[in-house]
Image 1: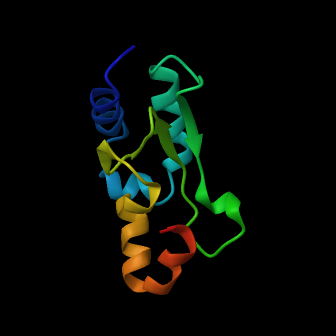
Image 2: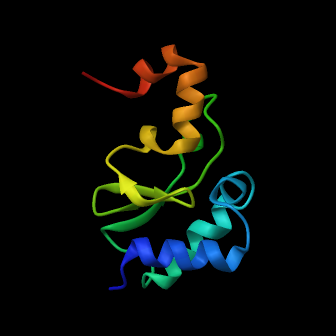
Image 3: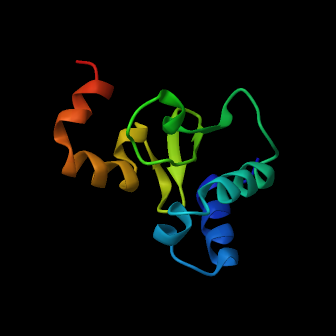
Length: 104
């Protein structure tokens, strides 16, 4: 299987814009392309959209792969979707919302 970090960097380059711009309007297309390049959906590779959770979070698609979360701004992955840059910005603005998603 290809290296997901390299796949993300290559597809981000193909989009011809910043990871921030991709994450703000093109994230679903980006996520689909990365998953396709990685060989398609599997038990350890899928998309993840916290906006499906009936909440006020930013609408965003990211990739869940081997227990880590990736998107156009985060090619190395993080251990929680709440640590992706788009959500970190949101939780910085609304810190009380983070407790809703993080269990002690």
